[in-house]
Image (cartoon, rainbow over all chains, first blue to last red; front, side, top):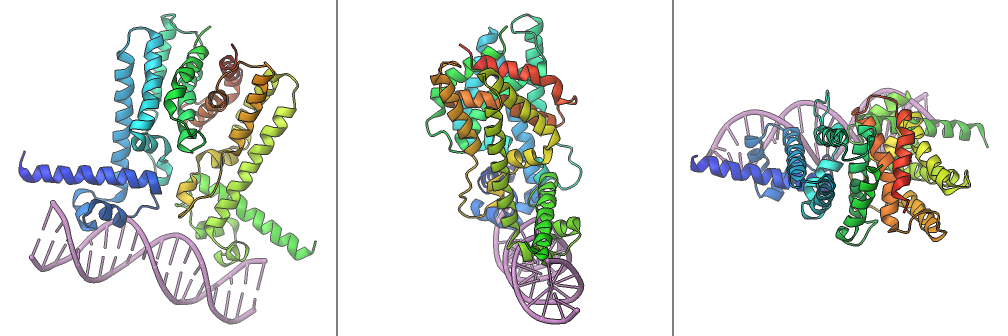
Length: 194
Length: 194
DNA sequence: GTCTATACGCCGATAGAC
DNA sequence: GTCTATCGGCGTATAGAC
């Protein structure tokens, strides 16, 4: 790898990072390329050297974020042996990411593709959801959790922690999320038991 | 009420209705005043006779929607006697509205104030959530549901059905939501039991 | 109350020098 | 690879006739 390639890569990373921050804080449409350029300390022309459009930045960010969630879920589900602890780890990790990597998760959960993509929209964001559904279906077959509709099960697993996280972001909850995680997990787990 | 007042009111209602539809379908920022005017069959000038800005339309729509949800929840909770059936009715009504009054609920759940309001944002959308939390706290005191953190309880009550509704809107679920409602309610109810 | 016509600014995107 | 300068277009909002 040449020196220039490295510098180029660094600039790209910077544009990604600052763009995501601004998209989350101000919203996609309220963020102009001039805003991004200023935040990065470069010019709009420089941005266009790396990306062909503002939309391209957002779409790439979006795909990266989906991938990040996919990896997170996959690793989490492999990290424990017992079903109960796999799910506990998943809930805990979600809550942890919501505080430690807030911007990324906010981008994943709040940014609407509809607002970004103008015409036909081919982005599929249901990957992580489907992975979890597959996992839960398998666990049902093995008899580790209650046999129920797999969509309902996945909705219980994701809906409860995600809602907690969102009301925290909306400042409805003031306290640190950490104190809720045990109780949240127990609620999720209960829905999956006979 | 004079004739002209009536006509004026009708036009306003029309603008509200079409604006909400467009905001939901295309997104707030991808909807121009020209779009709204065309959809209403009037001119942009006419819109400005009734509203002072596009933002004003969105903010008023938003407040109306919050009020709608507040009323819906309040009436629902009074419609039954037993706690179990109050909550069942609530879950069922949410799911029903998601199909029958889709646009309104999509507006309430999907539109981000941050995207609309440019500067300081005073909109408070936590009213319905807080009402449900108060209800659940009272039920705990009466011993009708398990004593637990009230935020966690409210998150369980809202998070599960809302998540189901959202994945339906995202077309992850193909079938009619009606077939899930019993199972969804049972899941919610379980989280609130000892 | 509604129309047409238009002002004006901001934004995305490009051109061309360095 | 980054800059400055600029273009074209669209979107909000206004002015003034009817």
